[in-house]
Image (cartoon, rainbow, N blue to C red; front, side):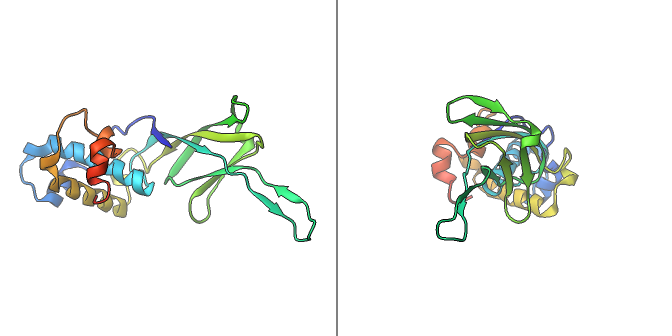
Amino acid sequence: MIQLLDSPLQMALPLNEVRAYLKILQPAEDRLLTHLVKTAAALVAKRHGHYALTQRVRVTAPLIHDVTRGLRRYARLFYHYPFITLSLYPIQSVEQVEVLRRDGKRRVIDPRFWSLSHTRGPHRLTIKVMDGASVQVDLTVGYGGEPEAIPITLRQQILFQVGKLYEKRDDLLVEDALFPRQLSLLGGEWGGKWGNDL
């Protein structure tokens, strides 16, 4: 489970770039476009794990306990340190790692007892605690505080989502209560209506 701890102060795309993409000449729909850009960036992050602007998130996941056996028939079992995979990009820093133990107690893990590695595929966070059941990790993700820092491919993904949302603008209730949280998380009727075609 991924929980947003804060939201970026800036928009992932400037309004003039969005207007040019949608071929809108007047700023009359800027309020709608602002909501759509925030929602599109949240959709890209939710589906692909790429966060455009810097923000803090909290990941809660069960620990994976890996066990291997030696080569010989009666070889001993090797219990490796548990880990979780993090499909979030880019990870700037890990601020806190908290383990929920099997006895229900929580324990904040000293940075000396966890490590974050990344070669190919998702990041792997390894915890040097054997009695953990799940872990809660607070991270800072994103490419920076300004839209110029976002890679062009990610900007294009967000623009594409803005275009898809703009096509459906007549179905949207443009109220602050709907954007970006309910719609970007595809909850309720929006998830059933748009979950497969965005």
